[in-house]
Image (spheres, rainbow, N blue to C red):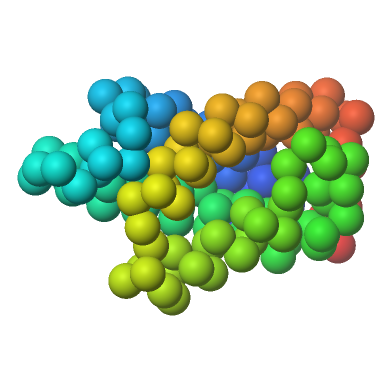
Length: 133
């Protein structure tokens, strides 16, 4: 069983890996319409949606392990929106649209990557502390 710090480090590394994969999967997508014009676009849409669900689930797991205060120094990210997106993607999947996925993949993920890297670095260096209690 992981100690909490090691578990969170592992989760952050998984999130970064998935975000890199998400960027590769969506590289050819230039507009929301690219998700709906053909089978290739629809496949990318569904893959990106699942990838976003996985990424947001990781941050929910970290919140559940460490509490909301864990993210308080990283105000560049609207964390409540991240947690809310996980719920939306998981429970309202039929209402997920191409524009929402596009805006998140192209607009929000590029901002989330460096913040996630900073959290990971701060945790590894001891600047960010997690109690195992």
